[in-house]
Image (cartoon, rainbow, N blue to C red; front, side):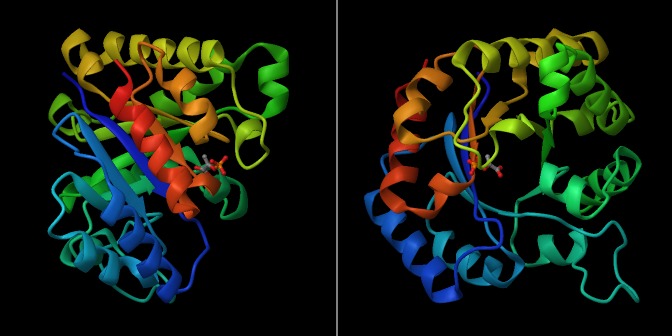
Length: 256
Ligand code: PEP
């Protein structure tokens, strides 16, 4: 059975003290997790040390970075490499978040390099994809997301692909309060799984966790996670408030 995951993307939020307090609050009230139901904190670089430290004793809770550089080391002022992240105890890295694509000009060719660097350094990748509003309005979202997946992931062999989690995040739903309907999410997740199956076969496609992201909250998570191909969520705003994030974790555990 594939894993369900609720991953909180803190983005550029929280001081170290606030981050520590949030993690402590969530861990204290965390329901029983297991191999099939896992939680990830995708914290800013500055927080990684303390979040790794504070979650070390919590099985099935992992830490993600929100980005990495593709080179191992060198004259890249302001950058952090995948090599440094794995050394710091980080397990996952988000690659291809729409905000990085938009504000840091990250194209699919660069994402390939980052994904390769992450996998070479024993990190697992949460690969983000999703269409802008004009693509959704034109009805071509399936082809758009398929292209993102092909250009960023299809160079991987099967052994590498099993270390990828996909997060479908329609851009028009991120931070907007406008969530995809459960049907829209399920339709796209099913499409993504079919695309993966064509390239890697049914076993790998069925084993790949596909998370939904975009204004997911405790109040809509039950409905969204009910989709047969929806394996949890990548959560932005609602990951910053312990009770909201815990509500989404509860929805994951109760689903399927
Ligand atoms: C995100 O940025 O990954 C995200 C899903 O944000 P939000 O939940 O705030 O829409």
